[in-house]
Length: 425
Image 1: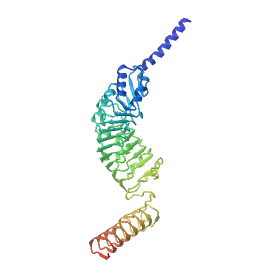
Image 2: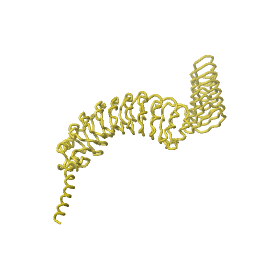
Image 3: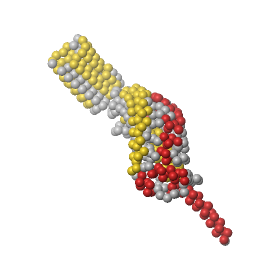
Image 4: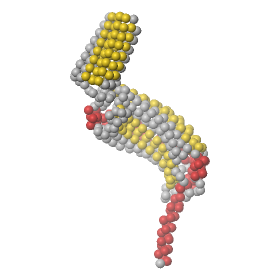
């Protein structure tokens, strides 16, 4: 019986001793953590009070490797910490794998010592007041799977170092002051699931990034930048894509039909660009699309030559349309009433209301105000129109007319061209 009790005691000690050892962290890490807390303002005083004793593996926000007591995790979001990030102290945590310091009040640039943490896998510093240009030394953190530097004050170009960060699956740098073109090395991120660079000042062609090698990509957000060019066809290879947000850029061209091949797409927002044309029929097959900005699954506001709300595509029909924001493409003999209507390559249309546009049409009759008309043999009445073309009849006030053989009556017009007949003031 005594032998049994002795055996049980030995087993109990064998179970408890590793746990006790894990709580007593490595002395180098203990020194580094005390130095880190000692250099912080704001909530640093509370942190120093909470971090007492020598068993730092049991401290709030600290995680250790149970086998050797080395600190591998430091999570201190929303602790009210202030001041520059104590880089020299962090460099002492040589086996650190995860650093989460988001939603504090850190200032200054990223400390150079941070880039010596070669084992770092997750780095999240979002929602602070960090500033400066992003260093090319980011490329030294080759094991990163998550990098979040969003909602800070970083500026300048994105360093072209992502070819060294091919393990990244989440990259977020939104709401900074980043500028310049997209670095081509972003194309190397074959493990990427989320890419969010919205609300910066990035410019240049969006096609600088080749998405073909990103089979796991589920979310892309480049909105609120100054990116140009057409929608990159390489996105068609992102079969896992669920959310594509490219609103508020300077994209041009048509809405490509290949978007309809993205079977998993749930959110599509390409509003406030300069895209033209009709919605591809394939998009109607994407049943998972959800509402964005009160649109039926897609947000396409401020897209000239596009049916924004009613989405009617009309071809050579004598239709009668009422409402707002309608578009007629290649139609004839249509009657439109309402506001903000657009006629493209249409003939013999009658429009009433305000802010209507006729592009390359002829023999149209427009009443109301603030119309934009190009073509020939149009009849325009009321105020505030811009008319281009020839053989148009314009009446009202404050109109601007260019072209030849126009007849203009009313007052306060600006008329250029030849063979004008002008009556009034």
